[in-house]
Length: 304
Image: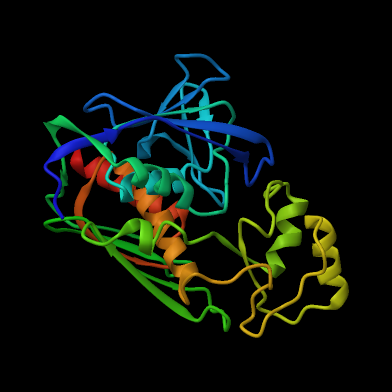
C-alpha cells in the first residue's frame, strides 16, 4: 500500500515506565508535528530547545539499544518507538521525553501502535518523500557473518533471518512490507535475552530496568535450581521454571518466531534513521543495532 501524502498523529499520546538499561522512570509524549519535520525527540528535562533529530548521523551508541545524540543531548533505546511510528505510517512526530531513556514498557512496540491505531492518522497536504536509492548498499560484519543488503525497490520490503546458533531458537525468518498489518504481525513481539547473559548484564549495569514482564528469557544451557532461585530474587518474583520449549515460564510466545519478528521490529526502527520511508528491499542476516545503524548511515551518505 503506497501512501501518497504525509501523515501525522491526530492527537498526542502519553506513556510512562522504566528504562530497560537505566531503570529510571520516564515519561514520553508523542505529539503531532508539522509537515516535512520528520521524527524528533525533545528532552523536556533539559529545555525546549534540547532537540535530537532521529537521523543515522546522530547515532552515538549501539550497545544493546540505539542511542542518538545531538549538541550534547542524548536519547537512548529509541528503536521500538521509531519502529511503531514507521510501521503505523507516521511521517512527522515530536516526542517529548523527560529522561535519557525511552521506557521499555512490555519490551515491544505494541502500546505505541495500539494507541495510534485507535484514532488513525491525520493526513497532511505535502507529498510523502520516499527515499530512492541509485545503487545497492551492502554492509557486512566479517567477524559475525552478519550482513544487510539494501537494493532499490518500488516500496519498502524487509526480509530477515536470525541465527544465534541456538538449539532453542533455531534459525528464524521474518518479513514485512507496507501492505502487511504491522500492528497484528510485528508490534507485539517482545525483546529477548539468553539466561546466561543476564548475570553479566546486571553486573555491568546494562539492564537495571529488566524484568520478566518485558523480555523473553531463553534457556540455552542447563541451569541449576539455585540459579533460577537467584534470578527470581533479582526480579523480585516467585519461583521461575523452564518450560519444555526452553523458555522461562513467565510468558507465552505470541508467535513461534517471535524473537525473529522482534529483530525485524528493531530493524524497521533503526532503518527509519535513514530519514523517511526507504523504497528498498532490505535483506538482513543476523542483524543488530550496530550493523543496522551502519547501514542507515551508508544509505544517508549515498542519498547525499
